[in-house]
Length: 220
Ligand code: DX5
Ligand code: ZN
Image 1 (cartoon, protein in one colour):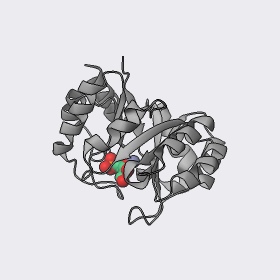
Image 2 (cartoon, rainbow, N blue to C red; image 1 turned 90 degrees about the vertical axis):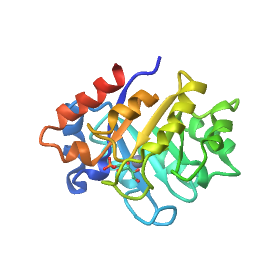
Image 3 (tube, helix red, strand yellow; image 1 turned 135 degrees about the vertical axis):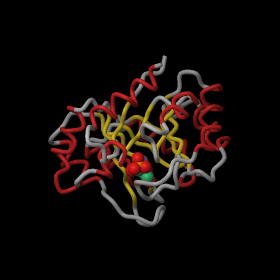
Image 4 (cartoon, rainbow, N blue to C red; image 1 turned 180 degrees about the vertical axis):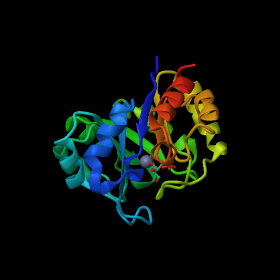
């Protein structure tokens, strides 16, 4: 059975105090820390890379759920493995021809492979990666255009989540973008079990309460 994973997006944290922000989220009940890697090319924004993951890894044993919004994900496998990444989620739009090699390399480097898709990408494009002999272990359905935190949740993406959940009852399905108390019900009832939340958690007066609300919605 799928279990809830609540993953605060560290994109909404104070990057100058990343270790203490991470500890704070884990104390508040976070399961994973979602790390948004943007290369300024695949998306029009630039964030952090392997050196920052390596620094954070020295301060925590937590599961680092790395979401790579980059044009050449293969180039990042070895640096991210060395840095201590736990999950390595690449974009299907950036791996049209080499996803088999990519999944194999991610696994052989001891990380957990996931695939993500942008709002405009049809869900069918990830089916071969889930059904492969050597499959991805998670699908991340973007519920905003990747690039920035604080955007509005796109409820029409729930068709993708429902279709995935029906086809793959035990798959980890992650949603990312605009998740919070007002959108979690629709995402959880569609079948998402891994919930990324940036601004709704970091911007809340009581982040622990938001994290437990998100978890309870997935559990029921
Ligand atoms: C967007 C990132 C998200 C983002 C989510 O490109 O992939 O992880 O930080 O932030 P919120 O929850 O604020 O939409
Ligand atoms: Zn993300």
